[in-house]
Length: 160
Length: 235
Image (tube, rainbow over all chains, first blue to last red; front, side, top):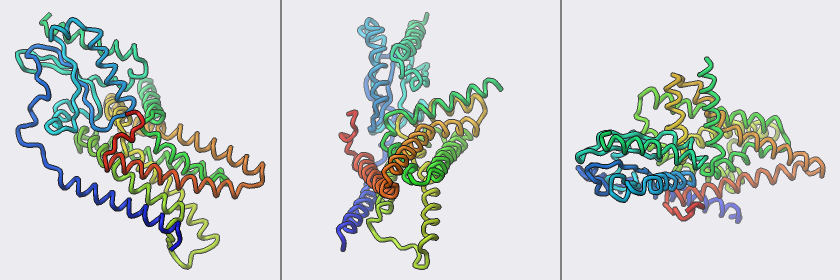
């Protein structure tokens, strides 16, 4: 057998082995336990505005930027509200067990930033910040986009 | 009418943004190389580019029809395509690379030879460009999923356009790749002609395409199937 044929065969075997591994991994996956889906990944205050960045195992440069910018928009724009617990920023990985339900809850089709208002331990309002993919190109615009929504949500959370 | 035109331009721009973002870079390089590999035949390069664009557009229109038409929930479609298409892409690219480099002897028919074999290869290359367009379009990475599902589909819903806006998006995603491929192919052709080595340049272009397919294929297998996320340059 010629050396180039050997290389070709090795590559085809690698491709086939990858597919076998993929199928085996899928078959061995266990479903999320019933009831676990509703549990929040972090304890949230009963009355607060929550800014959540939803991520998955696969990251991309733009996704990392969206995460960093949204965190900065919250933590530097509303330091007092964060300190006294009226505003929470968190990152939730939808690929982790128990978090898949967020895709349906917020109709998430991609990495997303969701601003939600909680009153009396219940989420009463939420908004998926759909323009993040447009705004991420200009940092100041992105910060302003998130901060405008958070400021409005903080006003609502206070009931003003 | 004016708002539909504005929506179409926005969709085209969203497509271009998708194409020039870093995450589909590996597949874009493979596509540029595949479209531009016939440096000696500019018409074939342009036709391959058009079929690649058509492939991408057909894929996006099909997904838009399924998702906007409510046949399947948008999060489910997006999650499925992001999870499985990138995983299937690795083995497919490896097989394509092996075929392009002729590493393993493949005989389609013993009666096919000479001019007819050349014509078959041309047809195969054009069909391959179309299929590549479909496959790469469906292999959503985070930013293409974000721009398509979270930005384009709401825009398409707003304008009640399941066909025009996804078509503009598809053209936008292919445009930078096709322009690059044509420019590179024409430049390589000029250099090849200048030195009287066009056949050699084309031979190398085919080999480079095959090697790129193998590299991208192995990279996708390691990253998306075996989960070696440390391979992501931005980690």
